[in-house]
Image 1 (cartoon, rainbow, N blue to C red):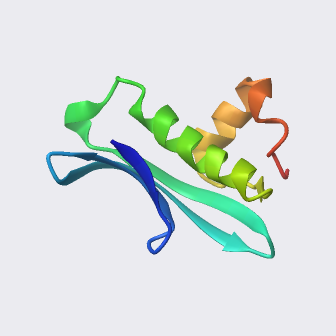
Image 2: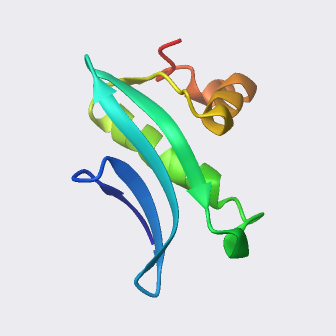
Image 3: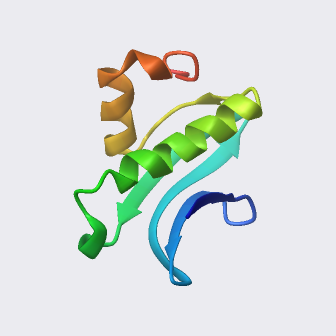
Amino acid sequence: MIKINKEKSRAEAIEDDKIIGLCEYKIKDGIIDIYHTEVDKAYGGKGLAGKLMDEVVGFARSEKKKIYPTCSYVAKKFDEDSQYEDVDAR
């Protein structure tokens, strides 16, 4: 299950009550900075990082906010895929 944890400012992937991935962000001046994405090595290669990022993107869209990605993974995804243009604050 992937969900936004607003108290910790991150999207979390949880399996069997264990966090197996996260995408952390901070909000400053109405802009969301996604600064860190991490997935447990045992779950790598399954697209989980992208799903976590997309959860934060969905959150940004619902809150009518833009994203300035400082996480290298997210910045690369934003550069490669035009579906994120509407939330890209760069």
